[in-house]
Length: 60
Image 1 (tube, rainbow, N blue to C red):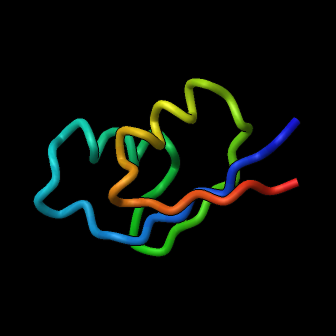
Image 2 (image 1 turned 90 degrees about the vertical axis):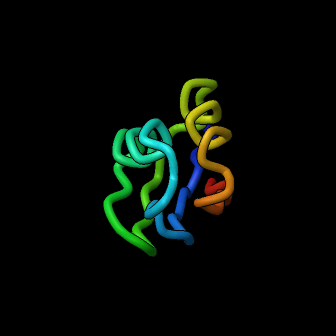
């Protein structure tokens, strides 16, 4: 199964509370944190919500 590497590249300061909560639920706590998650529709939806704060790469 494919995996996604999600990296926080922008600060969440000044963003909406649900964006902060989404970052936290993805496992991102601070700037330049990186997590590897399974490529599932739930994770894709969370990344879509905070797409302006993160970058995403596919990992094999």
